[in-house]
Image 1 (spheres, one colour):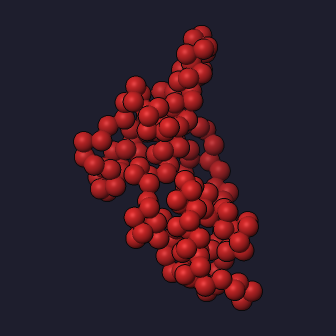
Image 2: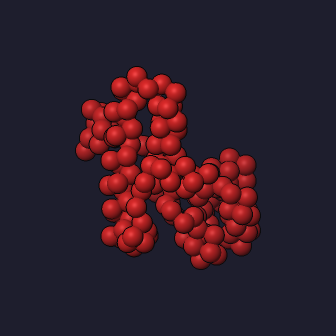
Amino acid sequence: MGRMHAPGKGISSSALPYRRTPASWSKTTPTEVIDQICKFAKKGLTPSQIGVVLRDSHGVAQVKAITGNKVLRILKSNGLAPEIPEDLYQLIKKAVAVRKHLEKNRKDCDGKFRLILIESRIHRLARYYKTVGQLPPNWKYESSTASTLVA
């Protein structure tokens, strides 16, 4: 399947290992991993950043293999999950950055077009999260209040 706003049809991605058991060299216990996840979340890291830090610095290849739950589920069970989903947050952050750029560079027509594409992705994703129930039904993206969501 192709990309939403690009002509590419690439399918490259990383593949998970076939074995679902933790690696034999991994000596961390599930409680240690859960404590580290909670500690990083309190510092303000996003779920994907937590996964990267655990992989690179703490030798945890797959959180789900060790704990049985994914990072976001662990955060939700401990009440530390972000209020808006991470992918939506990153899109809003990108839209705020482009809008700030357009305030300085008013003649940037391509930037204006890209902002329209980013905001249409935000609206589409918000519609999905409302139907799933991760966002309240009255949640609405507004460009004027977007910078406060990201800050």
